[in-house]
Each structure stands twice: as structure tokens, then as C-alpha cells.
Length: 206
Image (cartoon, rainbow, N blue to C red):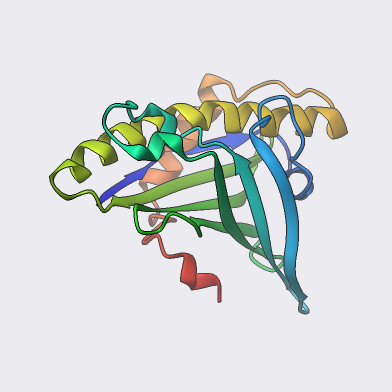
């Protein structure tokens, strides 16, 4: 099993704007592999919104990094995933859990993303913390597959952020990216505080 946490990033938009963009992020120019998106469940309480979605991806942008001669996983054309999200009005956080629900005899991939409101003198900012856990069931080759797939996942984050930004700019206009001073203060703040993502577990949201 491989686990990895991405460096903390952020959007120069307020928390409500980022949440709106999250629930309206498809379609965008950087997510052409998304075949469909359907809400399976939604529960609204006084201060939280729980949502479960089925997202069907056309092909797998992650598994394509595994060489064809290594595994039959490269022949996978459809990858349905479950995305569960918890919007918390009180703590001003949005936490999402995503996991594959097919081809589970071959691999398991869980992703957790935590969006958090963060106020700065420089302007609005929503921090993003992302972590992934993956495991393959391919005997002695499992470790190699995990390394290759994790590399592909890291590269895919760039397009994810670009697509998200495209939607934010569509609805709320273009904003200046986080400049160096803001990024430095954000890093210092995070290093002095507790880790946001302690464990990746898609079952936490149920």
C-alpha cells in the first residue's frame, strides 16, 4: 500500500465560492474524461450537507501510466467511483472522500480532500489538503504498480486544479494567484498547527 499527501495548496476565493465551484465543477475543459455525474443521496441537517455521488470516468487517467505489457489493467475503459462529501457550515470546511467501486479485485484507490476557510489580510483564501491511499492486488508486481499509479495521480492533480480554477473564474471572475508572501505565511501557519488529514478512510462519512 502507498500513501501520499500533497503539499497544501489553495484558491484565492472565499470558502462559499469554492464550495459552489466544487458542486458545479463538471463539465470543464480539463475533465473531458468524466462521462457522467449523478447524485445518489443528499441529506441536509441544520449545519451540514451530506452528498453521495456516482461519477463515471471514461477510461482511467491514473491507470494509463501502467505500461500495457505489464498488466491487463490498461484495458479498463470505464471506472465508476463513489464520491462522498460533507459540507460543514459551522466549521466552514468541506471534506470529500472518493473511492473506486469496480475492479476492486485488482486495486483500491481512496482519496480524501479537505477544503478549509482561511482568512488573510491579502484577501480571501480557501486552503486545500489532499491525500491518497492505493493498493494493488498483483502479487510481486503490486509495489511497482503502486509506484507508477501514484506518479500518475500526482501529475493529474495539476489538471484537477486547473479545471477547478476554470469554474471559479467562470462564475466569480479571475483572481490573482497566491503570491510568495501569502504562501510563506500559509506554510508557517500549517507547520505550527495540527495535520488536517490524519487518515484516509472513505467510510468516515457514513
